[in-house]
Image (cartoon, rainbow over all chains, first blue to last red; front, side, top):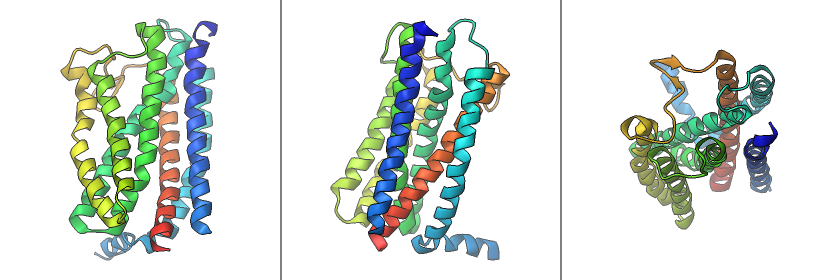
Length: 35
Length: 235
């Protein structure tokens, strides 16, 4: 696993970080739309 | 006949608003266990690949993200076409709500593909037909978002965006068949509707679970976003 750790975790970490960021932005927009 | 009438009722943004909220909640709840199950099967059940070793496990996000990038574009183009044909307000709103998530999955497909390409092909990027057409898809999404943002009147922005979305849909079959039509470094399809799957069953299960999780996630996020757009435009 160690030989490929950068590629594997680089893929998973960026993917889940971006999905999380999208959720944060959408929820922020939802709060602003309600206000 | 009555059923048809009831379905058309939901083409009104105000009627669709509560339905979108209910569907979004259920899909968000469904996405989490599906992702956990997909990652469990992908990392702890599926065996190590004989040729690629552990790095092949990028497949559990790369392939579902690539599928979503193309599928979301087709749905976006369909909504855009419906908007142009029937002049329905909800169609443009749905197309606008789908674009950011589609762009995100396109970027994820390119990013993970690049990180998978380095250890297996020896390069992060190559200008072959599959990679280039997927990059064009990202530009189409970004172009759609930028075009809509540049026009103040939302209905005019919807119509302009719809034209771009419909014309850009020609890129989807190009992406799909690029590995057949041209000699590419990218491998052919591992899963085919007509030929079935050419991969080990546990690997396939993990990949399909992750695809379902991404699907549920996309529906949930898109429907929450379309509710925001309805609120912003119509109060």
